[in-house]
Amino acid sequence: MVNVEFKNVDLNIKKDEILRGINLKFEPGRIYGLLGRNGAGKTTLLSLIATYRKVTRGVLTVDGQDPYENENIMPLVDFLHQEDYSEESETVEDYLGMAERYKPSFDMDYALTLLDEYKIDLKKKMMELSQGQQAAVDASMGLATMSPVVLFDEVTNGMDAPSREKFYHQVLNAKNRENRVIVLSTHIVSEMDYLFDEVVVIHHGKVLVDEPVDEFLGRGYQVTGNAEDIDEFTKDKEVVNSRTLGPTKAVSILGVPSSEDEKVFDSGKLSYSAMRLQDLFINMTED
Amino acid sequence: MNNNKVKNGTMDLSVISVFGAFWYIPIFTVIYITLFLIFGAEEMDNMSYFSMGANSNRIFMLVMGIIIGSSFIKWAIGLGMTRKQFYKANMYSGAILAVALTITMIIISLFIGLLPFAGTEHINQPLEMHPAMNLLTITLLVYLAYLAGTLIGAGFYRNGWFGTLGIIITILCSFIPEALDPLIVNFSGLASGTGVLMTVVVLIAALVVVNYYFMKDIVIKI
View 1 (cartoon, rainbow over the protein chains, first blue to last red):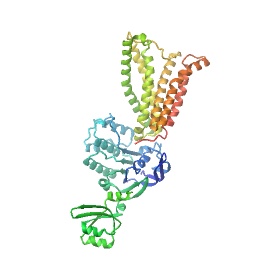
View 2: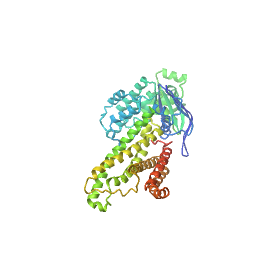
View 3: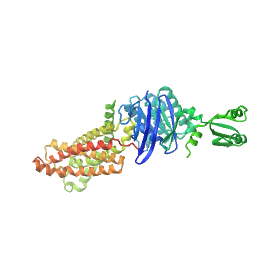
View 4: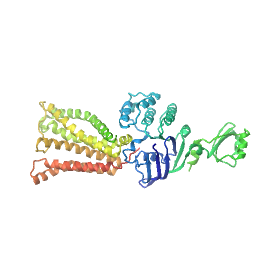
């Protein structure tokens, strides 16, 4: 079982501190949602695991070893991110063949099954595919390599809604097939939240949140009801998001409902539901 | 598994270079024939196909070196290769291509030489050693150009300063062998070209080492 661990990791690029004091552990068999605003350091964090660059301070291990220039560890990690295939004349078939030659654990049948779901013509050149199809090829390759650590960085960019939905199902199936560390870095929080077992929020180069998704969502709740009742209910509460549709209003509130609040919910006047991950994320990363 | 990575990398990089050579060789051949048809052998110093090709091979290899040094490191790391494995594959594939290109040029020159207008003089190479040593020197000069190219490519991939350093090293490598040849020949009393061969061997060794340091710890850009 391969895990990934950051211990007090810092990363400086020239004089800029990009990541500071990162302490994280990615365990096998779990899907991690890596969230953060633009420029927060998500891609950089993933690129450290993929050894695209070296940590400045601290210890990063994959399977208990430093992955950097480690011939045995580097093949265990797959880092999928948006690529420019505009000049890539290799066909999808060639790409699969190459992955099979370089990745000993690559499962060709699995790759073909995944790609078949997107109806991608294997004879087509990569540059002839649409951006969404290219992303689908990347996503399928990431899953089919069967690497114990798979890092998806905004891999659904360019995919249409049905393709994204297919990808989410494929990720869940992959999780059930193998005990792998799967990290999904995304901005489409609202669509992917149900995939996550754990949430990691990076903000200004620091880990703001690292906890199971249920625990994270327990930081707040959502209440829906008549707008006037809602306004009355939220008078002394921290509202992080509010949406109104006609006379109905839905608000996201930070904190745990009191016993009196629960009585209100029991009365049926207002309805209670779990907090939306996106609302919480937006609230927590607002400067 | 790890040796396979170097082997696979060497093969794939060689295929890429061979693909480039499939464009380069016909274009060069057409240019050679056209020049001789237009200007005549005398105007062209009666230069043989192989002699002219030896020089243009160096330019081709320099370009291939730049392309591979700058564009394929990310591809290699993405496939789970280490920088060191990519470096080795690159060094090997450059050597394979230098040999293959020289042999191809010899074979084509045998056919081109049959044409009535083609040149016959090997005037561009001040090499008067044993033919096998001359050939070895020409091949090594081609390989040296490739190493210089990868240095420029990897250098600019790192940053502008390393790229500039690569260009300076390339300029030095392009004239040092022939500049030092008379000195070494006079000193040693050996045949002309010995100095070129000795200098090229030293420069190749130096560039193999410098290439390693250019590649080591290179940051992959995304």
